[in-house]
Figure 1 (cartoon, rainbow, N blue to C red):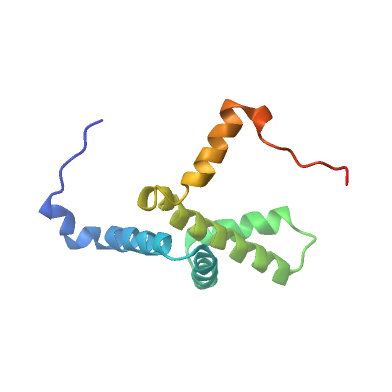
Figure 2 (figure 1 turned 30 degrees about the horizontal axis):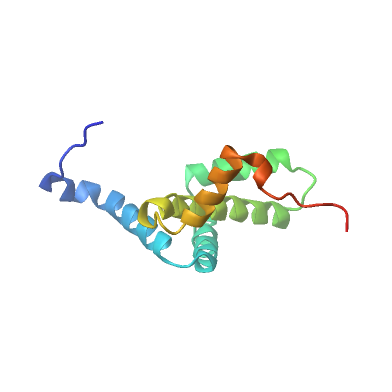
Length: 126
């Protein structure tokens, strides 16, 4: 895989929105996970009030799927959908920025793959 070298042309104003998004996701990955949830909820509530075509599509799909729910409940679903999307974007960067952060979990997952019988299972018997 070959990577293109950074060019000064990437600092042109037409790329500023992209740089802002990259910076936002980097900042979101830097803060503790509980704070990430709070910030993603705040951003989602702001996005839900926008007149974006993507938001209209999300709202329309939820309206069609959950006819029996009230308008307030459907609006909560729209915000929850947007919140999980923002949170997911921020957490995509976490393994890249903090590769050691998830090392313990990676070792645990590797153990499950290599020797699934060595991992204790939860018992339903008390």
